Length: 488
Image (cartoon, rainbow, N blue to C red; front, side):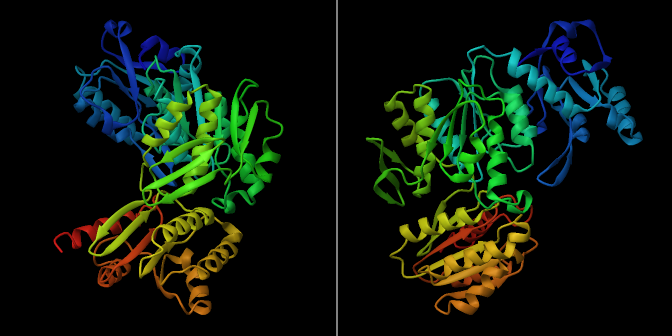
């Protein structure tokens, strides 16, 4: 999206701190917060920021000079940083050094606040009045469902969803600034990991279509109960109108939480389909008399697909295009990656912090697909942010695993220790090992070395872990294994 300088100033409560000439008033500029995506383009305004992202402090003001070298000719600065001597001196040095390269500097009270204001202006003033906004949320399944919706809608419409798996407030606001002016649909995956975010997303985006995939035990420590999680997720409907449609997973908690919102509601039941087949190549199923094909493993994906189907029908997408879109759908991120190493199948599924439900679903899919393998092994890390329910949920998981036809369970990190201790004491038929959280992943990491040393026969190994851990990213395990066994 492009903006005149007057538009930016009048819609961000900002002012010009420096300008080089009057020609700037005639130009159009494109804002960006991502220095890594900036190419040589004098019409980009860089917006540095300070924010807490996934519990990690980020500030990009020190990237301003780097961006100028890449071709940026204008940038924001904020009064909060300007009040600090080191940042103030940095700004003056940049202006002195790059005076001839800089068109202007915009000063604002807070750069992120300015971007949020610009995003709100963009949503309601820069697009066609016919623009439709679709938002997907839920404890689990939201990324897959978002990608299914994208795959279906792009068959007919110009739909923008930007970089996949980007669902936090900072980037959702930025996506509005990235979107082309002539798009017909905007698609957002919306995280409710922070209390109040989904209500803010609703106020910003005023969605025309909403999908709520499911509520699960993830973040129980923060919210206290599934009912509280359902209420948080349903707050995405706050600014939905009676003409909007919400596709909701049919469970007691969501029905209670959704009852007072003013929009059309369609509830879908999990398992409300006829399964034709499901294996490692994908699934075929019948839903409301129509046959669909998904080329991704796991019956849980069918429940996601049903919600995407209902949403597409609500927006009058032709049945033929729905089927084509689902057939073309492919997973993104570290979801169900299958590698063959020697005589072993290694499945890595580590998209984010898992919940009890996602681990169970993943194990069920794994054991269904590889049930005939002579050795079946599972590696898990624990479930986080469960608060006072941590032991209870992990015991529930342990009792589920106890009943499964597996030969070995590898538990990594302290959150999984309850599972290890229970299986060790109560399931003698399952070989059980525990490893502490490592400082990094390589061939010398204890549990990785153990896996390397035991890939010596036909087997299937499921690595189900974290995808957002700043140290232990479990997809690295598969990368190490592939490198070690590359020439064997």
